Image (cartoon, rainbow, N blue to C red; front, side, top):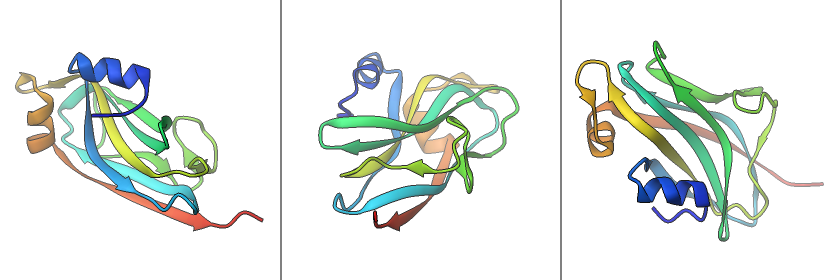
Length: 140
């Protein structure tokens, strides 16, 4: 994991963060907004946060994130049309010159049935992919 973000780099070094999906490359000369973003994870996994991050050059910014506690749905939405559940904003813009996006998880994954699980176990057995819909636009 080579995200230029001090917090994430520290967590990676401590084995408390992992890339769940991506990176997905984008054309930096174009502008994007996130219309919808969701991911699927088993309902008995908890104790982690999952976030969508955008990178541009050496910088990484968090677009949205959510903590998975008790009783979450199997498909978890970070952004739905008209609302970003982290910022409560209606539009989720990616930064200018955005090179791509990545889905990152951090924390200490816990399975209600098996106890603690590794990031590798989570990715292989409990994570079931993501949906990402971007809208490309031109600035006036």
